[in-house]
Image 1 (cartoon, one colour):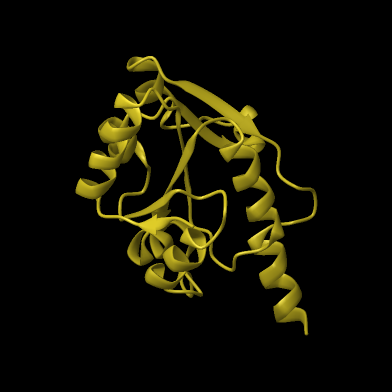
Image 2: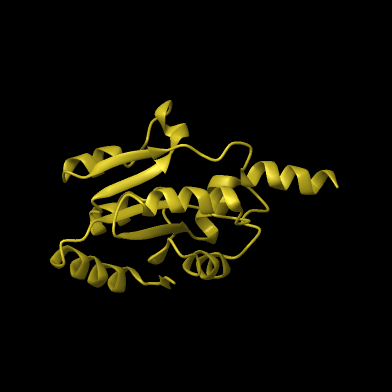
Amino acid sequence: MGHHLTLAAALAERARLRAAGQTLVFTNGHFDLLHVGHLDYLEKARALGDALFVGLNGDASTTRLKGAGRPLIPAAERARLLAALLPVTAVIIFEDDTADGLIRALQPDIYVKGGDYATKPLPERPTVEAYGGRVALIDYLPDHSTSALIARIRAL
């Protein structure tokens, strides 16, 4: 089971992983209304390395990026849920619109995002490639998205 860490604690854990020769995988997102599509994605990400850190968009960031009414679940609760998942080593809440600052600080070996970024720009890619990291794109589980889930709930 993972932990919700401050950036300082995450940097210390990153240093420990590096000293042990272990591979750090990093991903980020909102993870609002956690569902099996999220779990599938996180399992596939974790399979790429020894540890998986998840950058979690905080409440202000999620509202800016997803719109009014979001997030549905507060960041502290989303972090607790994510940290309880077996594939997740650590969760770090951040308030920026991209994970660029976290990536620059942590320098994960592998940065993972969803396969939808195969056809759109990935803002963090230049940062990852600048320090020699690798970007991996993972396909989403079909027909599983938070937006679709919210639409189904609203239709009830």
